[in-house]
Length: 110
Image (cartoon, rainbow, N blue to C red; front, side, top):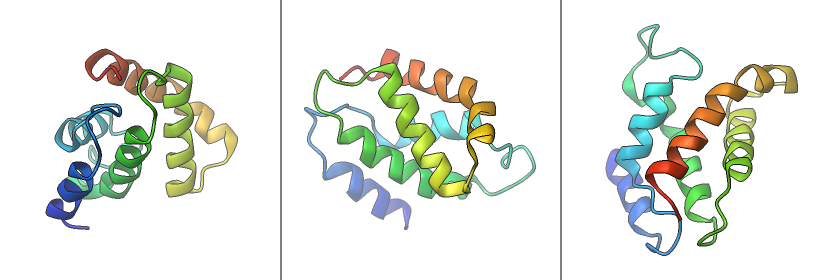
């Protein structure tokens, strides 16, 4: 999906849901670089599919119901689906998921 397609997807959601914008989520996920792909020289769009899926999931959380555990579960679900990770590998990434969830709750409260 093109950048314009992601932006259109982001605009399709109402502001009364968790108010995370595409650019901020891109920055957060790329900075975390959970799989280390960007550090190895992968293109900046490496996580675009995961970002789009996360954005959709975040905007689906009803107002006031975003919790740390829900966000971590969403990240785990997206990562497991995208990378076919077994539970042990998801557990290795738990601290990164926790850090992302904490930043989302801090900067984008529902």
